[in-house]
Image (cartoon, helix red, strand yellow):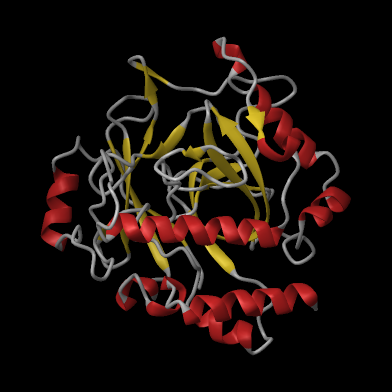
Length: 325
């Protein structure tokens, strides 16, 4: 009951401050979309490979700026009526579970397609660090969040890493790159990556058979023994095969609970909002979007089409990915 009351208080605070959760930062026609398409351009495992997202109506969208953070505006009313016990978030999958290619949202490119990261002219792959194979969860990002590099976090004493907040989906289903899924937040891990704060949200796909019984970090420890320890170990060592030192963590590598994670997400959402409304410096980040109300970076459908047409040839026919609201 205390968790429920705290969550209701969180929603009430969002309403008082006219948060995008209530004010509709994304225009209604996109919020109501139930499906997104992925469209591949270029050849996989090459520097020119890109995955673009678009709505079922054919509008190209940015997975960084256009996909709503909250899975549905309707859940707010239900939640406050004690019908819905969780706040659900959209997660954009960048790296499917068990794979090695380091795919990520291209924050500096128009419409922010998903691409494979390149370092020193070479495509990046995460090494298999025994006993793990590639990424040990579906790995991705929360849309409409931004870890502000101009802000020093009071808990970690480090600035943000200039990216959307990362998410580890503990679900057993292997998703695909570009898929938008609904997740329930369970907690957060504070990775310090080369002197920058790099939050790792721990979540569970709502389609997972265990989703109804996993509601906290404590539940994960009981029902998925070893999974959280493996997560810390993975993040600690995944760069060591490249000759880099082990990563460090805030809070001595301890996971923070769901309430703490929600505050982290709320802050990152506010930083993102300032970013797309040109209230803070964006640097090299591309804020071009198709649907964010009152954003000076909003573009027309024609302009978005031109961005995609300018990229390499289409690799395959669009593939349906489904987001249920």
